[in-house]
Image 1 (cartoon, rainbow, N blue to C red):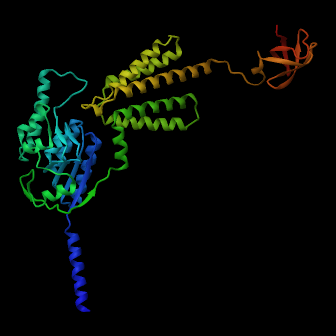
Image 2 (image 1 turned 30 degrees about the vertical axis):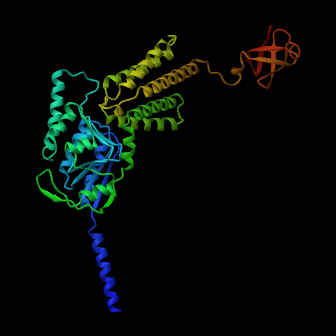
Image 3 (image 1 turned 90 degrees about the horizontal axis):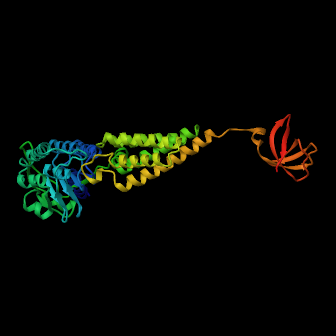
Length: 425
Protein backbone atom coordinates (compact mmCIF):
# COMPACT_ATOMS: atom_id res chain seq x y z
CA UNK A 1 0.00 0.00 0.00
CA UNK A 2 2.82 2.40 0.91
CA UNK A 3 4.60 1.55 -2.33
CA UNK A 4 1.45 2.30 -4.35
CA UNK A 5 1.05 5.63 -2.58
CA UNK A 6 4.65 6.56 -3.34
CA UNK A 7 4.21 5.75 -7.04
CA UNK A 8 1.06 7.87 -7.24
CA UNK A 9 2.76 10.78 -5.49
CA UNK A 10 5.76 10.60 -7.80
CA UNK A 11 3.47 10.48 -10.84
CA UNK A 12 1.59 13.55 -9.65
CA UNK A 13 4.84 15.40 -9.00
CA UNK A 14 6.16 14.56 -12.46
CA UNK A 15 2.87 15.69 -14.03
CA UNK A 16 2.87 18.97 -12.14
CA UNK A 17 6.51 19.54 -12.97
CA UNK A 18 5.84 18.89 -16.62
CA UNK A 19 2.93 21.32 -16.58
CA UNK A 20 5.01 23.95 -14.81
CA UNK A 21 7.76 23.61 -17.39
CA UNK A 22 5.43 23.76 -20.38
CA UNK A 23 6.44 26.76 -22.46
CA UNK A 24 3.93 29.51 -23.11
CA UNK A 25 3.62 31.60 -26.25
CA UNK A 26 1.39 34.68 -26.52
CA UNK A 27 -0.38 34.89 -29.90
CA UNK A 28 -1.26 38.28 -31.45
CA UNK A 29 -3.37 38.37 -34.62
CA UNK A 30 -2.81 41.35 -36.94
CA UNK A 31 -5.27 40.78 -39.77
CA UNK A 32 -5.86 44.41 -40.67
CA UNK A 33 -4.26 47.63 -41.83
CA UNK A 34 -1.41 49.16 -39.84
CA UNK A 35 -2.91 52.14 -37.98
CA UNK A 36 -3.04 53.49 -34.38
CA UNK A 37 -5.59 50.93 -33.13
CA UNK A 38 -3.64 47.92 -34.45
CA UNK A 39 -0.48 49.47 -32.98
CA UNK A 40 -2.14 49.76 -29.54
CA UNK A 41 -3.42 46.19 -29.77
CA UNK A 42 0.02 44.81 -30.61
CA UNK A 43 1.65 46.82 -27.82
CA UNK A 44 -0.89 45.43 -25.35
CA UNK A 45 -0.12 41.89 -26.52
CA UNK A 46 3.64 42.37 -26.08
CA UNK A 47 3.06 43.79 -22.60
CA UNK A 48 0.98 40.72 -21.73
CA UNK A 49 3.81 38.48 -22.94
CA UNK A 50 6.30 40.33 -20.75
CA UNK A 51 3.98 40.30 -17.72
CA UNK A 52 3.33 36.56 -18.02
CA UNK A 53 7.03 35.82 -18.62
CA UNK A 54 6.13 33.99 -21.81
CA UNK A 55 8.78 32.14 -23.78
CA UNK A 56 7.88 34.10 -26.93
CA UNK A 57 5.29 36.34 -28.58
CA UNK A 58 3.94 35.12 -31.91
CA UNK A 59 2.52 37.82 -34.19
CA UNK A 60 0.46 36.34 -37.02
CA UNK A 61 0.27 38.99 -39.69
CA UNK A 62 -1.81 39.49 -42.81
CA UNK A 63 -1.83 43.14 -43.84
CA UNK A 64 -1.66 45.27 -46.99
CA UNK A 65 0.30 47.90 -45.07
CA UNK A 66 -0.71 51.17 -43.49
CA UNK A 67 0.51 54.36 -41.87
CA UNK A 68 4.24 55.05 -41.52
CA UNK A 69 3.97 56.59 -38.04
CA UNK A 70 2.07 53.57 -36.67
CA UNK A 71 4.56 51.21 -38.33
CA UNK A 72 7.50 52.95 -36.68
CA UNK A 73 5.83 52.67 -33.27
CA UNK A 74 5.20 48.96 -33.78
CA UNK A 75 8.76 48.27 -34.93
CA UNK A 76 10.08 50.08 -31.85
CA UNK A 77 7.87 47.92 -29.60
CA UNK A 78 9.10 44.72 -31.27
CA UNK A 79 12.75 45.72 -30.96
CA UNK A 80 12.37 46.75 -27.31
CA UNK A 81 10.36 43.68 -26.26
CA UNK A 82 11.99 41.71 -23.42
CA UNK A 83 10.29 38.60 -24.85
CA UNK A 84 11.50 37.15 -28.18
CA UNK A 85 9.13 38.15 -30.98
CA UNK A 86 8.19 35.83 -33.86
CA UNK A 87 6.46 37.45 -36.83
CA UNK A 88 4.69 34.88 -38.99
CA UNK A 89 2.96 35.76 -42.27
CA UNK A 90 0.05 33.34 -42.13
CA UNK A 91 -2.13 31.57 -43.13
CA UNK A 92 -1.28 30.62 -46.71
CA UNK A 93 -2.26 33.36 -49.12
CA UNK A 94 -1.52 36.12 -46.62
CA UNK A 95 0.81 39.03 -47.21
CA UNK A 96 3.02 41.44 -45.33
CA UNK A 97 2.83 44.37 -47.69
CA UNK A 98 4.31 47.83 -47.29
CA UNK A 99 4.41 48.61 -43.54
CA UNK A 100 3.91 44.91 -42.75
CA UNK A 101 7.28 44.13 -44.38
CA UNK A 102 9.04 46.45 -41.91
CA UNK A 103 7.38 44.60 -39.05
CA UNK A 104 8.40 41.21 -40.47
CA UNK A 105 12.06 42.20 -40.74
CA UNK A 106 12.11 43.62 -37.19
CA UNK A 107 11.29 40.25 -35.58
CA UNK A 108 13.72 38.01 -33.72
CA UNK A 109 12.38 35.18 -35.89
CA UNK A 110 10.76 35.95 -39.26
CA UNK A 111 8.65 33.20 -40.84
CA UNK A 112 6.17 32.82 -43.67
CA UNK A 113 3.54 30.25 -44.56
CA UNK A 114 3.67 28.54 -47.97
CA UNK A 115 1.97 30.67 -50.62
CA UNK A 116 2.39 33.96 -48.77
CA UNK A 117 4.32 37.04 -49.92
CA UNK A 118 5.99 40.13 -48.47
CA UNK A 119 7.52 43.38 -49.68
CA UNK A 120 6.37 46.31 -51.86
CA UNK A 121 7.40 48.71 -49.11
CA UNK A 122 8.02 51.91 -51.07
CA UNK A 123 6.74 54.91 -49.05
CA UNK A 124 3.68 56.63 -50.49
CA UNK A 125 2.36 60.11 -49.69
CA UNK A 126 -1.21 60.71 -50.93
CA UNK A 127 -2.77 64.06 -51.74
CA UNK A 128 0.58 65.91 -51.91
CA UNK A 129 2.75 66.26 -54.97
CA UNK A 130 6.35 66.03 -53.80
CA UNK A 131 9.27 67.33 -55.81
CA UNK A 132 12.18 65.05 -56.64
CA UNK A 133 14.22 66.22 -53.66
CA UNK A 134 11.45 65.55 -51.15
CA UNK A 135 10.72 62.15 -52.69
CA UNK A 136 14.38 61.21 -52.41
CA UNK A 137 14.54 62.41 -48.81
CA UNK A 138 11.48 60.36 -47.86
CA UNK A 139 12.78 57.27 -49.64
CA UNK A 140 16.25 57.58 -48.10
CA UNK A 141 14.84 58.10 -44.62
CA UNK A 142 12.58 55.02 -44.91
CA UNK A 143 15.40 52.88 -46.33
CA UNK A 144 17.77 53.97 -43.57
CA UNK A 145 15.20 53.09 -40.92
CA UNK A 146 14.88 49.58 -42.39
CA UNK A 147 18.67 49.12 -42.64
CA UNK A 148 19.11 50.22 -39.03
CA UNK A 149 17.69 46.97 -37.69
CA UNK A 150 17.83 44.51 -40.61
CA UNK A 151 21.64 44.43 -40.39
CA UNK A 152 21.52 43.72 -36.66
CA UNK A 153 19.10 40.86 -37.29
CA UNK A 154 21.64 39.31 -39.69
CA UNK A 155 19.36 39.49 -42.72
CA UNK A 156 19.93 40.55 -46.32
CA UNK A 157 20.13 44.34 -46.21
CA UNK A 158 20.27 44.83 -49.97
CA UNK A 159 17.20 42.67 -50.68
CA UNK A 160 15.30 44.43 -47.90
CA UNK A 161 16.26 47.83 -49.27
CA UNK A 162 15.12 46.80 -52.76
CA UNK A 163 11.61 46.33 -51.34
CA UNK A 164 11.68 50.02 -50.40
CA UNK A 165 13.48 51.61 -53.33
CA UNK A 166 12.16 49.36 -56.13
CA UNK A 167 8.89 48.17 -54.52
CA UNK A 168 9.99 44.55 -54.91
CA UNK A 169 7.75 41.85 -53.45
CA UNK A 170 8.97 38.36 -52.54
CA UNK A 171 7.29 34.97 -52.34
CA UNK A 172 8.00 32.76 -49.34
CA UNK A 173 10.65 30.77 -51.24
CA UNK A 174 12.34 33.90 -52.59
CA UNK A 175 12.38 35.50 -49.16
CA UNK A 176 13.98 32.38 -47.68
CA UNK A 177 16.64 32.14 -50.39
CA UNK A 178 17.52 35.83 -50.01
CA UNK A 179 17.72 35.42 -46.21
CA UNK A 180 14.93 37.88 -45.52
CA UNK A 181 13.19 35.31 -43.33
CA UNK A 182 14.43 32.42 -41.19
CA UNK A 183 12.07 29.62 -42.18
CA UNK A 184 8.84 28.53 -43.88
CA UNK A 185 6.25 26.69 -41.79
CA UNK A 186 2.73 25.48 -42.66
CA UNK A 187 1.17 26.23 -39.24
CA UNK A 188 1.83 27.51 -35.72
CA UNK A 189 2.69 24.13 -34.20
CA UNK A 190 5.21 23.29 -36.93
CA UNK A 191 6.77 26.74 -36.62
CA UNK A 192 7.22 26.49 -32.86
CA UNK A 193 8.60 22.96 -33.09
CA UNK A 194 11.08 23.96 -35.82
CA UNK A 195 12.56 26.88 -33.87
CA UNK A 196 12.72 24.99 -30.55
CA UNK A 197 16.29 24.93 -29.30
CA UNK A 198 17.42 27.59 -31.78
CA UNK A 199 19.84 30.20 -30.47
CA UNK A 200 18.89 33.74 -31.47
CA UNK A 201 20.69 37.05 -31.08
CA UNK A 202 18.53 39.73 -29.50
CA UNK A 203 18.71 43.32 -30.69
CA UNK A 204 20.98 44.24 -27.78
CA UNK A 205 23.45 41.51 -28.83
CA UNK A 206 22.59 39.01 -26.10
CA UNK A 207 22.12 35.32 -26.95
CA UNK A 208 18.98 33.34 -26.08
CA UNK A 209 17.86 29.76 -26.66
CA UNK A 210 14.21 29.37 -27.66
CA UNK A 211 12.05 26.77 -25.89
CA UNK A 212 8.81 26.55 -27.84
CA UNK A 213 8.12 22.87 -28.54
CA UNK A 214 4.61 21.91 -27.44
CA UNK A 215 4.03 25.42 -26.16
CA UNK A 216 0.71 26.54 -24.72
CA UNK A 217 -0.74 29.12 -27.09
CA UNK A 218 -2.49 32.01 -25.34
CA UNK A 219 -4.32 34.34 -27.73
CA UNK A 220 -4.69 38.04 -26.92
CA UNK A 221 -8.17 39.08 -28.06
CA UNK A 222 -8.95 42.70 -28.96
CA UNK A 223 -11.10 44.59 -26.46
CA UNK A 224 -14.56 45.91 -27.36
CA UNK A 225 -13.12 49.42 -27.65
CA UNK A 226 -10.41 48.21 -30.02
CA UNK A 227 -12.92 46.31 -32.13
CA UNK A 228 -15.23 49.33 -32.48
CA UNK A 229 -12.43 51.78 -33.22
CA UNK A 230 -10.78 49.32 -35.58
CA UNK A 231 -13.99 49.18 -37.62
CA UNK A 232 -14.22 52.97 -37.58
CA UNK A 233 -10.71 53.31 -38.97
CA UNK A 234 -12.22 51.96 -42.19
CA UNK A 235 -12.76 55.31 -43.99
CA UNK A 236 -15.78 53.99 -45.89
CA UNK A 237 -17.62 53.02 -42.71
CA UNK A 238 -16.60 56.25 -40.97
CA UNK A 239 -18.03 58.38 -43.82
CA UNK A 240 -21.31 56.43 -43.85
CA UNK A 241 -21.68 56.69 -40.06
CA UNK A 242 -20.96 60.44 -40.23
CA UNK A 243 -23.64 61.08 -42.85
CA UNK A 244 -26.28 58.92 -41.16
CA UNK A 245 -25.58 60.71 -37.88
CA UNK A 246 -25.93 64.10 -39.60
CA UNK A 247 -29.32 63.14 -41.03
CA UNK A 248 -30.59 61.97 -37.64
CA UNK A 249 -29.49 65.23 -36.01
CA UNK A 250 -31.34 67.18 -38.70
CA UNK A 251 -34.50 65.13 -38.03
CA UNK A 252 -34.22 66.08 -34.35
CA UNK A 253 -33.91 69.80 -35.18
CA UNK A 254 -36.87 69.58 -37.57
CA UNK A 255 -39.11 67.80 -35.03
CA UNK A 256 -37.89 68.86 -31.57
CA UNK A 257 -38.70 66.59 -28.66
CA UNK A 258 -38.31 63.25 -30.43
CA UNK A 259 -35.01 62.81 -28.51
CA UNK A 260 -34.06 59.41 -29.97
CA UNK A 261 -32.91 60.63 -33.43
CA UNK A 262 -30.89 63.45 -31.90
CA UNK A 263 -29.24 61.23 -29.30
CA UNK A 264 -28.42 58.45 -31.75
CA UNK A 265 -27.23 60.93 -34.38
CA UNK A 266 -24.91 62.68 -31.91
CA UNK A 267 -23.39 59.34 -30.88
CA UNK A 268 -22.84 58.33 -34.51
CA UNK A 269 -21.23 61.66 -35.44
CA UNK A 270 -18.90 61.54 -32.43
CA UNK A 271 -17.89 57.95 -33.24
CA UNK A 272 -17.21 58.87 -36.86
CA UNK A 273 -15.14 61.90 -35.87
CA UNK A 274 -13.19 59.79 -33.38
CA UNK A 275 -12.42 57.22 -36.08
CA UNK A 276 -11.48 59.88 -38.66
CA UNK A 277 -9.22 61.53 -36.09
CA UNK A 278 -7.06 58.38 -36.16
CA UNK A 279 -6.62 58.70 -39.93
CA UNK A 280 -4.82 61.27 -42.09
CA UNK A 281 -7.71 63.62 -42.91
CA UNK A 282 -7.38 66.23 -45.67
CA UNK A 283 -8.70 69.57 -44.39
CA UNK A 284 -9.53 70.93 -47.85
CA UNK A 285 -11.99 68.04 -48.14
CA UNK A 286 -13.58 69.09 -44.85
CA UNK A 287 -14.11 72.56 -46.35
CA UNK A 288 -15.75 70.93 -49.39
CA UNK A 289 -18.17 69.06 -47.11
CA UNK A 290 -19.09 72.28 -45.29
CA UNK A 291 -19.61 74.05 -48.62
CA UNK A 292 -21.86 71.15 -49.73
CA UNK A 293 -24.10 71.56 -46.67
CA UNK A 294 -24.36 75.32 -47.30
CA UNK A 295 -25.34 74.79 -50.96
CA UNK A 296 -27.97 72.21 -50.01
CA UNK A 297 -29.53 74.63 -47.52
CA UNK A 298 -29.55 77.43 -50.12
CA UNK A 299 -31.28 75.10 -52.60
CA UNK A 300 -34.17 74.70 -50.17
CA UNK A 301 -34.53 78.49 -49.77
CA UNK A 302 -34.14 79.63 -53.37
CA UNK A 303 -35.62 78.39 -56.62
CA UNK A 304 -32.44 77.52 -58.51
CA UNK A 305 -34.05 74.71 -60.53
CA UNK A 306 -31.66 72.19 -58.96
CA UNK A 307 -28.40 74.01 -59.78
CA UNK A 308 -27.45 74.61 -56.14
CA UNK A 309 -28.44 71.06 -55.20
CA UNK A 310 -26.31 69.59 -58.00
CA UNK A 311 -23.33 71.73 -56.95
CA UNK A 312 -23.82 70.71 -53.31
CA UNK A 313 -24.00 67.01 -54.15
CA UNK A 314 -20.89 67.31 -56.35
CA UNK A 315 -18.96 68.98 -53.50
CA UNK A 316 -20.25 66.29 -51.14
CA UNK A 317 -19.06 63.43 -53.37
CA UNK A 318 -15.63 64.96 -54.02
CA UNK A 319 -15.17 65.89 -50.36
CA UNK A 320 -16.08 62.39 -49.16
CA UNK A 321 -13.89 60.74 -51.83
CA UNK A 322 -10.79 62.74 -50.89
CA UNK A 323 -11.47 63.03 -47.16
CA UNK A 324 -8.94 60.43 -45.98
CA UNK A 325 -5.39 60.75 -47.29
CA UNK A 326 -4.36 57.08 -46.92
CA UNK A 327 -1.17 55.57 -48.39
CA UNK A 328 -2.94 52.36 -49.47
CA UNK A 329 -6.37 51.74 -51.06
CA UNK A 330 -7.66 50.12 -47.85
CA UNK A 331 -7.21 53.45 -46.05
CA UNK A 332 -9.08 55.57 -48.61
CA UNK A 333 -12.76 56.18 -49.34
CA UNK A 334 -13.90 54.17 -52.36
CA UNK A 335 -15.60 55.88 -55.29
CA UNK A 336 -18.72 53.71 -54.92
CA UNK A 337 -19.05 54.74 -51.26
CA UNK A 338 -18.60 58.44 -52.02
CA UNK A 339 -21.12 58.37 -54.87
CA UNK A 340 -23.82 56.38 -53.07
CA UNK A 341 -23.47 58.23 -49.76
CA UNK A 342 -23.18 61.67 -51.38
CA UNK A 343 -26.17 61.25 -53.68
CA UNK A 344 -28.37 59.71 -50.99
CA UNK A 345 -27.44 62.28 -48.34
CA UNK A 346 -27.83 65.22 -50.74
CA UNK A 347 -31.21 64.21 -52.14
CA UNK A 348 -32.67 63.30 -48.74
CA UNK A 349 -31.41 66.55 -47.20
CA UNK A 350 -32.94 68.71 -49.96
CA UNK A 351 -36.24 66.83 -49.71
CA UNK A 352 -36.45 67.20 -45.92
CA UNK A 353 -35.45 70.86 -46.00
CA UNK A 354 -38.13 71.69 -48.56
CA UNK A 355 -40.77 69.89 -46.51
CA UNK A 356 -39.75 71.80 -43.41
CA UNK A 357 -39.78 75.18 -45.16
CA UNK A 358 -43.15 74.46 -46.77
CA UNK A 359 -44.62 73.55 -43.40
CA UNK A 360 -43.25 76.70 -41.78
CA UNK A 361 -44.50 78.99 -44.56
CA UNK A 362 -48.01 77.54 -44.59
CA UNK A 363 -50.57 79.42 -42.50
CA UNK A 364 -51.44 77.51 -39.33
CA UNK A 365 -55.14 77.48 -38.50
CA UNK A 366 -56.95 75.60 -35.76
CA UNK A 367 -60.56 75.05 -34.68
CA UNK A 368 -63.30 76.82 -36.62
CA UNK A 369 -60.79 79.02 -38.47
CA UNK A 370 -59.47 75.91 -40.19
CA UNK A 371 -62.88 75.51 -41.94
CA UNK A 372 -62.74 78.84 -43.76
CA UNK A 373 -62.62 78.16 -47.48
CA UNK A 374 -63.93 74.61 -47.17
CA UNK A 375 -67.01 73.26 -48.96
CA UNK A 376 -70.10 72.41 -46.86
CA UNK A 377 -73.38 70.68 -47.75
CA UNK A 378 -76.74 72.20 -46.80
CA UNK A 379 -78.73 69.92 -44.50
CA UNK A 380 -81.48 72.48 -43.66
CA UNK A 381 -82.34 75.06 -46.34
CA UNK A 382 -80.69 78.44 -45.89
CA UNK A 383 -83.31 81.17 -46.05
CA UNK A 384 -81.18 82.91 -44.97
CA UNK A 385 -80.40 80.79 -41.83
CA UNK A 386 -80.22 77.02 -41.76
CA UNK A 387 -77.82 74.17 -41.13
CA UNK A 388 -74.80 72.75 -43.01
CA UNK A 389 -72.44 69.83 -42.59
CA UNK A 390 -68.68 70.40 -42.89
CA UNK A 391 -65.95 67.88 -41.96
CA UNK A 392 -68.65 65.55 -40.62
CA UNK A 393 -69.96 68.21 -38.21
CA UNK A 394 -73.33 70.06 -38.21
CA UNK A 395 -73.14 73.84 -37.92
CA UNK A 396 -75.69 76.64 -37.87
CA UNK A 397 -75.12 78.67 -41.01
CA UNK A 398 -76.27 81.89 -42.61
CA UNK A 399 -76.18 82.86 -46.28
CA UNK A 400 -76.84 86.12 -48.09
CA UNK A 401 -78.58 84.17 -50.84
CA UNK A 402 -80.94 81.24 -50.27
CA UNK A 403 -79.56 77.69 -50.69
CA UNK A 404 -81.67 74.55 -51.06
CA UNK A 405 -81.23 71.18 -49.33
CA UNK A 406 -78.16 69.28 -50.57
CA UNK A 407 -76.65 72.32 -52.26
CA UNK A 408 -72.95 73.07 -51.79
CA UNK A 409 -71.78 76.24 -50.11
CA UNK A 410 -68.37 77.66 -49.22
CA UNK A 411 -67.47 78.76 -45.69
CA UNK A 412 -66.21 82.37 -45.69
CA UNK A 413 -66.33 83.31 -42.02
CA UNK A 414 -67.60 82.70 -38.48
CA UNK A 415 -69.86 84.82 -36.22
CA UNK A 416 -71.08 83.71 -32.80
CA UNK A 417 -70.76 79.99 -33.62
CA UNK A 418 -72.63 80.56 -36.87
CA UNK A 419 -70.87 79.92 -40.14
CA UNK A 420 -71.15 82.58 -42.79
CA UNK A 421 -71.42 80.81 -46.14
CA UNK A 422 -71.98 81.59 -49.78
CA UNK A 423 -73.33 79.53 -52.63
CA UNK A 424 -70.84 77.79 -54.87
CA UNK A 425 -71.49 78.77 -58.51
